[in-house]
Image 1 (cartoon, rainbow, N blue to C red):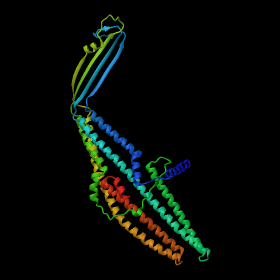
Image 2 (cartoon, rainbow, N blue to C red):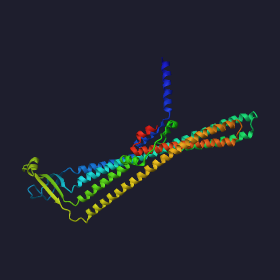
Image 3 (cartoon, rainbow, N blue to C red):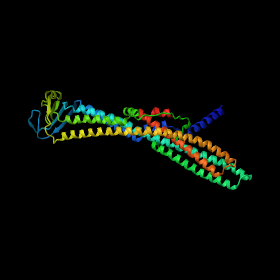
Image 4 (tube, rainbow, N blue to C red):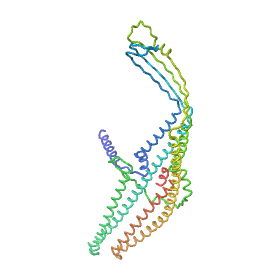
Length: 452
């Protein structure tokens, strides 16, 4: 029985080691989810949004009355004033307590308008956070496709090398049997050497692309990282056309890049109202309650002194104040504030119009690039199919001795270029399509799942 337990434990140990040793393959969704959660730039942007939330809360709390408590205890020696307001030279103890509160009844609605302005700035901060997130996602997605393209070039280069090595093996056997000249073997060996160099370069390019993506994700040093490569042949390219005007209409409603400026514009209008409110009179209501306690310390206890509670009740004072502040002349500071607020509002209006123009231009170029890329993809795919069949024919002729090594190498190089052009055009079309769909929705999550 002990032997069986030992064998089971040993098998479990090796199984756990095998599972641990398996390297995780990161999908595009994995990369984006990790970056959105852990990116330092996004975390800083969230802190800025939180600070705007605190500013909003502060302006809301300014509507409430304040309440302050004050208490002071002092021991006096020498000349001082006693509780009867007479001069005394006895050592004494005094305890003063005071509570006050006031609330602004009217101030040109500056508090209300400040709350509204801060609320719009907080919403603008939320949109800024979305913009930073979307920018990061676009960068990751672009680099992820660079990795896929580099891996595709690596696979194509490996296939070219395998073809050359296969032919070298065949030619070597034929040279050994005297059926082919040794010079032909040298030509094939030269081709194999060139393909090995191309494959090595493709491997280094692929490794660099993966490293760049890892750095973009800000993974900890020493973290094992590799990318899951989906089966690109299973990704269908649909015959879809996009209209610039319809996409722009959806984008103007969904994208945070316009909403951010719109909120800033609405906040600047409220800030003008805040500046104008400083021209109005300020009416404040206040109240206070105070009392004090006095005790002589260096006289006999036979001298009667009221107790602590009796003195507090007897010395209690109450007051209510109503103050009015009329701004007459403040070096024109209020008028300057109004003028600056208007300038910021006008600047935000121009900024919004400029961003609308830029967005329309981006969408127009995206739609044109997609439609052109679709034609390029169809032509590249057709060219790859044609060159595949052409190379198969040249390969058979080469193996039969009907064409020389140079013709075979040209056909193989042409096939390699056609394959890489088809891969590039397909990946470009996918990312252009994803970009247009993002303009329509403002979100990437569901779009990425649909692609893979």
